[in-house]
Length: 235
Image (cartoon, rainbow, N blue to C red):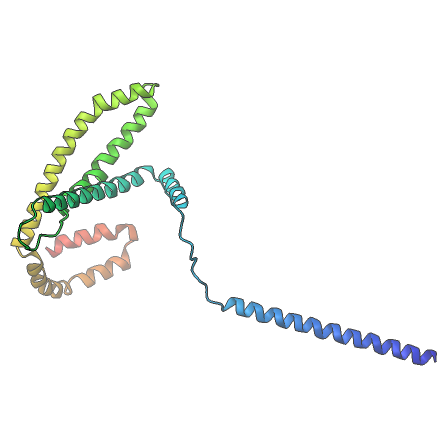
C-alpha cells in the first residue's frame, strides 16, 4: 500500500511539473508572438497637433540659443507678412471704392511683391540687428527707469531709424524693380541656356583633370584656393 501511495504521489508530481512546463512554454510563445507583432506593427502618427504653448516654448528655446539669428528671421517674416497684408487690404479697398456701374470684371486684389521683399530684407538684415544690439545696450547701460528708457528710445533712436527705413526701402524698391526690368528685357534665362551648352563641353576639357589632381594631392582646406587658381588659368 505504501508503495502504491508513493507511486501515485510521484505520478501526481510528474503531471504537475509537465503541466507547469507546458504553461510556461505557452506563455513564452505568447510573449514572443506579441513582441513580434509589436515590432512589425506600423507606427501611427500622433493625431494631436502641437499646442500653441509648445510652439512658444520651442521658439523661446531657439531664441535663447540663437538670439540674433532668430530675431532676424522673425523680423523678416513678420515684416513681409505685414507688407503683403497691407497691400492686399489696400488693393481690395480700392477695388470696392471704384466699383463700376456696369457688370465688368474687376481686377483681383494684388500683393505688391516688390514691397514684400523690400520690407523682408530691411526687417531681417537692417532693423533686427540694430534693435538687438540697441536694446542690449539700453538694458545694460541705459537708465534704470522704464519711463526714461522709453523716452531715450523714442526721442533719440527712433527718428533716425525711421529715416533709415524710408531710405532703405526706396533703395531696395528701385533696385528690385530695375533688376526685374533688366531681367525681362535682357532675356537672361534664354541667353544663359544658349551659352551654357558650349561652355559645359569646353569645361570638360580642363576641369575634370584640375579637380582630380586637387583631390589627389591637396588637403581639403586647400580645395577652394586651388580651384580658384585653376579658374585663373582657365580664363
